[in-house]
Image (tube, rainbow, N blue to C red; front, side):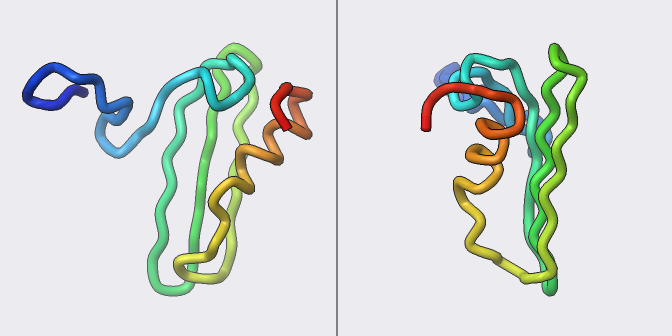
Length: 79
């Protein structure tokens, strides 16, 4: 998906895709929150790995947690 001027948004039907933030691994991800819960799902097709992060807290402050756990679990570089 792209903006009107052609700039890639890295989003398509609410899915994010890319490689840089995950140690160079290709990924697709989706997440969101509602009353009573926050979720993030990250799929690494080349590694055949799917990670799902769920809380029972709506609008939970989990920004950065999925990326850090991915670094730990998949041995990616970058802190």
